[in-house]
Image (cartoon, rainbow, N blue to C red; front, top):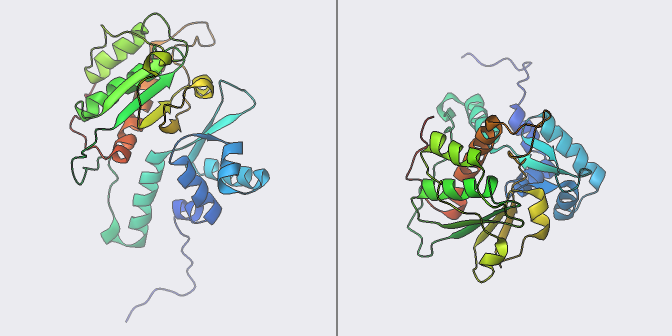
Length: 266
């Protein structure tokens, strides 16, 4: 009977090699809840900063984690888990073990709820100006859940109007009309309680009220900020909306809400 040569060494898939280390797995699980700075991860995992930074570098080199400079304090960086890469890594690892375990990861996650929740989750998205990132997130969560989530957005220093590029990208890419929407201040929601408060701006995170909720941070660049030429380009809003859309899709299983609306193709 034929057998595999004993002198052949098969290396484990890269995803397993990276994720199997206990500290790296702990870092991945912490980042699955939201974006964090190094000092926050150090506090959460209870390990020295140099050790945490070393393993974060390995995760970054492997493409499972990304980092961006904080817009609140340029000396800090926020680390983010790339859930899309993790999904593909898990699928590839199964196929490497046995053909029967081969499966293609979904382009975006869809996990139906086991039952309809008796309590409709309430989610608040916060950024500084409430003119781009937070209203885009609010609109996309409402769009994908057909209104089964109570969702709102606000700013810590709201601008007078939504950015026209934000209105345009939602209309052209998702068929959502926000032309009549207005910005608002977080203080206007002081008497409301939310199950989840998600900040999308590093500056807003520092001053956002508690609201008695589960707090999550998504560190995202402001698409309305001028680029190196002093211009505000529409492409930045397309990128931001696509990124927020992915984050919303991964948020929905946390809320235990099945998706009912698929993304409209541009």
